[in-house]
Image 1 (cartoon, helix red, strand yellow):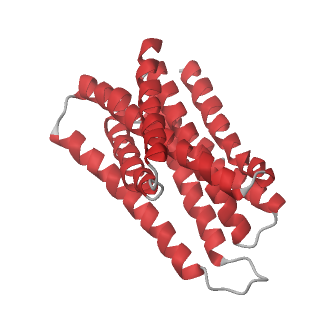
Image 2: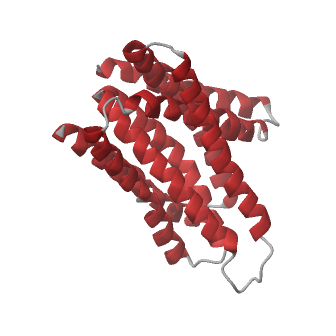
Image 3: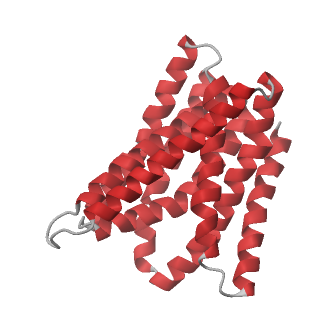
Length: 251
């Protein structure tokens, strides 16, 4: 159990540190950042789906079978992330019209939504390590690769919302630390509630499927004006899946 605690906390701290990556984009031209981001998003979509279908789902089916309850928990995960994204998008739309010399309300809402998202990431990572070490590592990498483009975007949102660079970076990192809280609570509950992973893992699967198919992949279709770009996106997507498959050999 001590090993699970160590790897879980270390993993969520690593994921939290990724929130500082936004500062690196300030020295790059916007066009270059957008070009890099689209391939990171492609790779991220592949890792999320790869982790869901290559690691999390097979482990769940092997341990608990493919029951109606498992299917409903997966759908619950999709619904949870649908509601979360709707909440964030709705607040972005309704909070954008403000005075330029004030912090825009949508920037604060983005922090709250991002903190909740990171909290869920912490839960997913901790519960994955409770299943097995290889599954935990695979899930950590999937979350990590997803966080890179997301945190760059969140940093941009905070700057657009009126925060200074320093404050935007600090608040984004503070929001990212919610993952640590999610992991700690999950590990504590794991000692009190048996078979916690029976419903949390399928919910994580649903979340990963939703993020990849409803959030990331549609972004790729918006940047498919050239065949060469589409092929590179497909290549990055497949590489993401292959990376998740290669992690099977950790076991």
